[in-house]
Amino acid sequence: MLNFNQCGKTFADGTVALRDVSLEVPRGQFCVLLGPSGAGKTTLLRAVNGLTSLTTGDVELDGVALNRHTLGKIRRRVAMVHQQFNLVGRLNVMENVLSGSLGDVPAWRALTGLFDSRLRRKVCGLLQDVGLAESHVYKRASELSGGQQQRVAIARAFIMEPVLVLADEPVASLDMSISATILELLRDASAKRNTTVLCTLHQVELARQFADRVIGMRDGTVVYDGPPSGLCGEALDLIYDKRAEVEISSRRTAVDVLAPNAIAV
Amino acid sequence: MARPDSEIFVGGSKPAQQWRVRQPYGPKLILGLLFAAVLLALSARHTQIDKMLVMTAEWAAQIVGLRPSSEVGKGAKRFADTAFPLVFHEEAPVSRIEKFDRNNLPWLSHLETRTVESARYDFDRNEMVADFEKQEFLVKPVGYLVYVCEKMIETLEMALWATLLSIVISLPLAYFGARNYSPNRFTYSASRLTSSFLRAMPELVAALFLVLMYGFGPIAGVLALGLHCAGFFGKFYADDIENAERGPQEALIATGAGKLAVLRYAVIPQVLPQYIAYTQYILERNVRMATVIGVVGAGGIGIELKGRFDMFDFGHVSTILLVIFLTVLGLERISQWLRKRIIR
Ligand SMILES: Nc1ncnc2c1ncn2[C@@H]1O[C@H](COP(=O)(O)OP(=O)(O)OP(=O)(O)O)[C@@H](O)[C@H]1O
Ligand SMILES: [Mg+2]
Image (cartoon, rainbow over all chains, first blue to last red; front, side):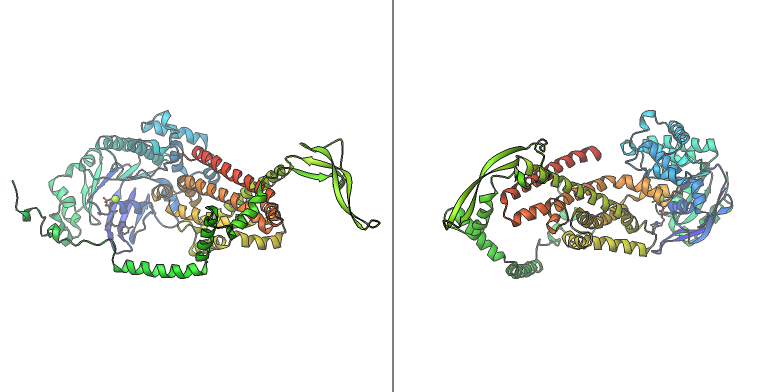
């Protein structure tokens, strides 16, 4: 279970990215974050594994609050998938996936590159699961197409059996036709392991198709929290529509108006 | 259908005829250039640029036959007259060779008997007389060339070790000098300062001191070149680490990987091509520098070059120059070829 307790973030330049966000995400849920650009979705994700530190509030994973002492432990249980894939272009696919386990293998193995052969077998299995072939394993990551790179990134995310995967716009750099496939892979891989997924998206369509639960954000606050089926007229206006802006800024916590008790699925 | 002009302009913008345009250069730039010209003229006096032009012109005049002689021409002639033929051979009278073994001559050599003429003062006749004496010589037809090549190989080895040494020294300098990996500001500044200091110290000056400390020979040369280049590597490597793409590093940090592991997997693969390019450049540079660093006694072919030059043995000097020239050219070729293979 993942808990956000009254999370707030103000950047050094004064930008307020998160305002008092409280959420509870149960284990195994595929939770999609929607919201316009600058809503604070990325900031919220990065707060979970400490890439961004919160100004107020805290994040707990299975009852363990993220702090200086628990950072390493939590990072090893939480994987991340990025919009730009963030593979190392000059390393091959095998090395890229193996690098996902660096937090868990002993330092001497990490630095010499002598990974356990069972781990290499596991990489092959993961690569097959995301739809890559044997011929891809020793190709350089930079030689793959965008869709293939994101498949590698998903394999990398699952190598350590994470309890939570943070996916920040995993399909934003991809073609629409491939987007659904990639999200399907992400959903299947996490469903198989009962892994929680927190995924930001820009396409409402995809959210409807894949999410167990949708969280709509705007201006650093949660303005919608409910099932994808509830994503219609009013809710979408709250999240995206310009006209709702005035209303939201006057009543900062619009979520109280729309969904007083966040609906968990 | 023609529209009225005003309709073409988007909301409130001026017509193009009234847009402000800038001149490519204004009075400020022209004044600046004039000022620079005055400074240059002053500095030209200090550096005798005027004299250089006059001397070169005189030389040119001599070449086309307008003048009987010129200073530059005289100097060049002094070298050119004795520079050829190149000296490849080496010979020594057998009588002066210690432990000479007639039945076991060195490789590529033979014995020659010559009649040597020497002058002697005859006290009876009160005049100089010529004495003729048979003397045996050990002649090595390419002996000198072989010696120069050996010295050149020593020079190459110096360059190689200097480069290796500089890499070893620069690795910690690069790690602690990269803002995003250095543990704190003190280590950062300390290693950046060290790099700058090493870079700023001219090799020849360093070599002078190192010869005092370590004596004549290659040690001083290797250290002088190695320390200087460590400063270069320290800076370049550190800059590259700082500028490496952030995304992949963050991806590994997010898995809980340690700093060194992130460096190993997300930084080094990215910067490796540049590293190899720098290293190659420095190696080539060290070869060139190692040939001259011997001038101050720090090993390599430079010692021989300086000695021969001071004795006006220009035939020998030409041989040395030829070997240096061919080696540097050859190395450049090899390194270009290697680079294509290694960096993909
Ligand atoms: N490092 C930073 N320094 C200052 N401000 C930042 C920083 N990172 C993000 N912000 C600001 O915080 C706010 C929230 O940014 P965030 O990246 O979380 O938005 P987002 O919802 O992910 O947007 P997008 O959909 O465009 O990715 C924005 O106003 C952004 O400009
Ligand atoms: Mg974002």
